[in-house]
Image 1 (cartoon, rainbow, N blue to C red):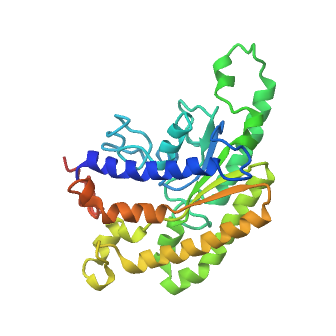
Image 2: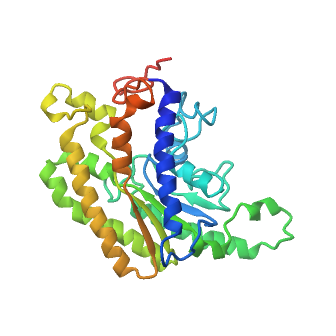
Length: 321
């Protein structure tokens, strides 16, 4: 796969999301009325992890980061993620991972997302959404104490400049991209019907996390739905022998149908949130449709094999130049 063309395709997705984001600022009764958010606090999985899994688990090697950053970036990508394009649109620095202690700057937010994370406990790792929110609460409390203890004449002013200002927490944008691993882990251990029945409980845990942040003063929420996981290369590889499971794009239909149902329930949950959290501004972002459109029209952006691994294989990490 041509990685530069792939970056172009995902760049189109990110621009679509960014334009949607700009529209949010103009909606009636938006708390801030503009896109002048001083910070972003992100929660999620590998779709928005900017270095936590890299810091907490195994190191990522080439070709991660080569298309934009030029070296290892801590992202499960050779370039930028959607959250990176959002920070660029808001003229903010890229988010430092909360778990990455080396060279981090939290003055304009922090990233609590960890690759492999799920909404509910008991998934691929221990960094479920509830724990990420708990880490945020600790981060907010601890940085507020440090910020207020340090004077502007501190002998190490750069240290204070890397901390968030206490007043910015209530003005920040709170973003979420999580849920894909709840579905994937569920399918590995349960039937499709069982996972669908579990979806309300998964989304109940999601709402609890948002409620906690709201009680802490968060007011603007940006919530991604889950993408077409049936279009991931690993899904396609395991279903090649069962061609009746594949759609016209080669994506696994049952997995995408599950994502559709999960997203339908998530959208209903967001509607309820808007009633239960009257001071909040909550935006539901249809990432599924944007990604699937790009997969469907991939050849219009270049000769791409979107259902193949760009570099190596799931069965053995053999780099393809």
